[in-house]
Length: 494
Image 1 (tube, one colour):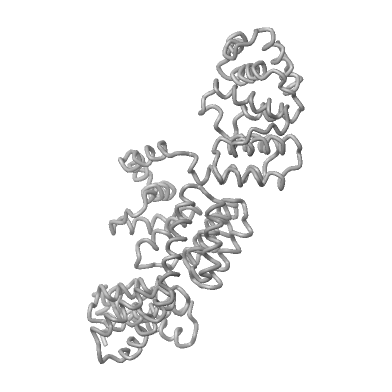
Image 2: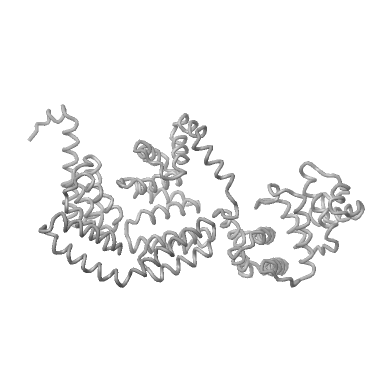
């Protein structure tokens, strides 16, 4: 055995010794059924000695037993990279993929094992696995195609902000494939954006119950807690990610970006810098999270350099060109405004949904009777839905005139000024509707709304507002005075 003085002289020898100690502790914990402890020690061993196949194989076995099958497979593939002659990793990969019903991959690895070690100790089991997979595939080829189709469809719907459609697709997928965990993870995100927080966490719990150690479910849980303002709980749970060192760069980025989102910038910066050194650039937001974490950890010059980079510029240009109608956060904000805001905001939201004029918007508007019983809001919503369906029925004459008024006024106020959830243009209109205003003259009412909107900004002359919609100065001034009394009696003027 090497003497202590020799270890001190050779730092690599010290690292090797440390790794060996972690490995033996991990192996002992594994044999005694202390799996979490085994994962910790074997993770340390493989970090210190990432090329030791013995450590990696044991680590992969423990990960499999804790339910972290994807992570286990990443480790086994690392073994294959290090030692092409290692057939043990082929057999474990075949069984792992079969366990999660990824039969094509499982069969390929089993056949590769049989080709490499026809008389190996796992040859008989590998041949039996191939035979079983062939039988399964005959029955399930159609099912697998359907799973892939439905999951891709749900992802497209999420990307376009089609939350109700995505929810329906994912729920259908889960009924057919109850152990397909990515569907639960995506469903949780959709439910959260729909304001169904309890259901979102329940979906994530199903993943963690059925597939313990699922990193995507844990990361999603942390992000949702952060979004709900429960940062203390998110930080407590994030401790589980501190020792996760996947050899798969995508998985590692998922963990690092999650840590950045919830404010654990110390850990996030360390991981993101490691990914940068390895040449990772698999996500357009990589530089964004790295620069944020750099700034938060005192690396100000690095953060500033990113903001001046071509990458940051291209991100800004892409965001500017994005169609807000397909923005997930925008759609979510509208739905949650219906559920949580007051009736003034609901009228504004109903008008915006009417402009989107698609099935998702109709489904959102159909929720209105569940969130308010104000007759004006319900009548306005019903009128908008009729028009979206191409129907010409007038649900209520006053509400119909109100909608004609706001649409006429919109023509003379830019999109940038009025298309905002905080826009007082729509707020004034909504308050007038709820006050019982009759809108007897659509043009006169529209001119008054235009004047009141500009009055607190750059200002417009009453005669100019009147001329826009071809009504008289006197009629416009009369409407303005009436609206000022309704909206702000203490400041009524004209």
